[in-house]
Image (tube, rainbow, N blue to C red; front, side):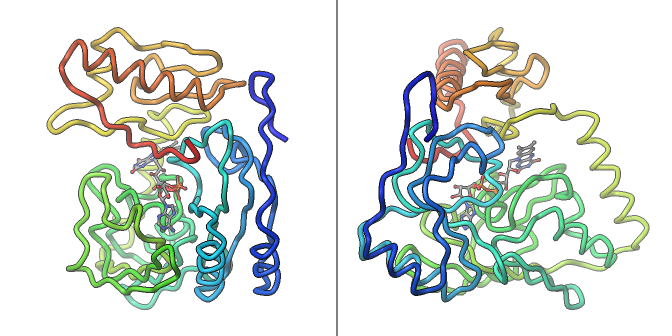
Length: 311
Ligand SMILES: Cc1cc2nc3c(=O)[nH]c(=O)nc-3n(C[C@H](O)[C@H](O)[C@H](O)COP(=O)(O)OP(=O)(O)OC[C@H]3O[C@@H](n4cnc5c(N)ncnc54)[C@H](O)[C@@H]3O)c2cc1C
């Protein structure tokens, strides 16, 4: 049971048929896992169910069983860009594991499971003297989450390296996308929403090994020295074209605003931190407050980068 502001939020039992089908498919079901433990904001109530399928067949079994039982499904990678509701999630969360979290490098081609850790993928390519992922070294992410968000920094985005993607729709039907079929944009991806990324093929280019390693280390140092520490989801809002969200927010005098245990960083004004005891409702309230004030003063409606789960 998760308690927020004195109110208990409980997971609901899943249909027995679904539980039975998961058991028969060899998939361990965790009931009532608090999403605060699965997201970097550190907030969020219980999910009715949490499963960690380790193969394409297991993912298909989960999705088909949930579809037939009428149970909603969502995917959580590293939870580094999701705000989970205090009430939690009424349905089943899929978190990819096993073979779906592995990495294989052949020459300049990386095959990554959707659940693989982006930092490890970046490190593997850097060690092999390949360029294309070195700037992603410090982003907390799964490969699937990165492809869903088109994660990037310092001018490099994961979408640029994609050669193919194997994904499933929510009914368990598979599709292999070729590069030309996927158009990635600034923190947007055609994969977020309709698809669950199972595997991706990424194409990297050879580079002088010393140089690419030095680039990755420089990025990591820069991130360590400049980014705020604490429980957050990184940047809360996307930058509007030609502008910086943090500058618009600072201009409106919002730096350092607090709601409960939630703090809008006083220097990194596009980062909201859980300083202890925060609730998802407080974070959502601060996001709305920022949007309203910035829109009232500048006419610009900031678009959240952070995704909501269970709201
Ligand atoms: C300290 C910090 C620094 C950050 N810095 C950066 C940065 O420099 N650049 C940047 O781009 N982001 C940054 N972020 C945000 C975050 O790291 C990225 O958005 C990351 O790609 C999210 O990946 P995830 O695995 O955590 O996805 P989650 O947060 O679990 O999910 C994010 C979205 O992706 C979807 N998703 C997850 N897995 C899959 C899958 N397998 N298939 C389909 N959809 C999926 C979810 O449904 C959700 O909509 C930062 C976050 C933190 C906490």
